[in-house]
Length: 346
Image 1 (cartoon, rainbow, N blue to C red):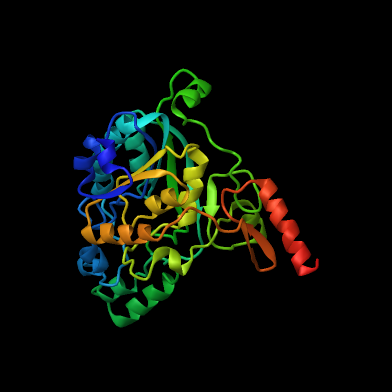
Image 2 (cartoon, rainbow, N blue to C red):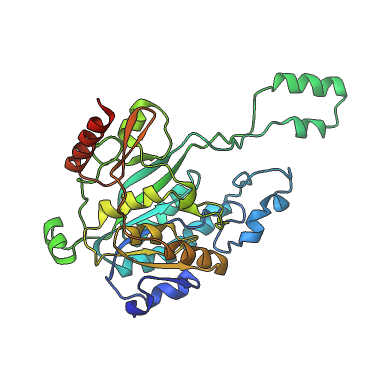
């Protein structure tokens, strides 16, 4: 059955497609599921999400994620438990499962994955500085109080700077889970070609792989240790209307960190505009993508059309510093750096 799905983006519900995938046949699951904030749940509809302020009734300009409802996490857990159970079945022993989430409901997602039987290995962090603050002033509510104007003004002055408990969020957590391996890590690796991490993969300026990643320059220390290539304009595509496209470099980093064979299959049950599949194809891996949105599927297919295997240079020179291309060996980096020094006369 996998042959019918291999290297394809499949239109349909994950709950319906996943049972068609063979047991113990997937090397890596890398996905960005609905976060269950506001209407961004398993009934995700792009048109509704695009007009998300229409149903944030308290303040019309509320951004996604501000509407708090404790039932969101409970529904997220129940739904993702069913999804994770299928993902556990299809993964090879020792296979890894990476799943993005929001900081607020991350615990629900991880609990579902843990309760299915996965081993929770780590939490990866995608770090960034640019995001919309969600904390809200109380002035709007004060104006509605049955107080005189003088009291309202005094109250606004007293509560100046005090806002609702929603701080500016500058990271996304990514769970790193693993299906139980057989016997030992070595036995499992020899049998299934999965279960260990490739520490030849580098991040930042030729640094040992870490669980913190960023695609924007923040500071010389964070750049040195955690920087991955910044997304290009061409990477996403001008035709791409998806609201939460993930950086290609992060997906490439995780794929090469955890898979070592060109026969490895990377599964994304919520593929969206196809970044996981694009990364897999660039790295010479096989892929299966699933999504319920026809428009997203068409975008993913369009992005895949022009993808060739990675043949670009091993680094980029920016701001008088060297930023490594992700996943390249130190020897190649040193060789390229030497050539650059000769050309620049340094």
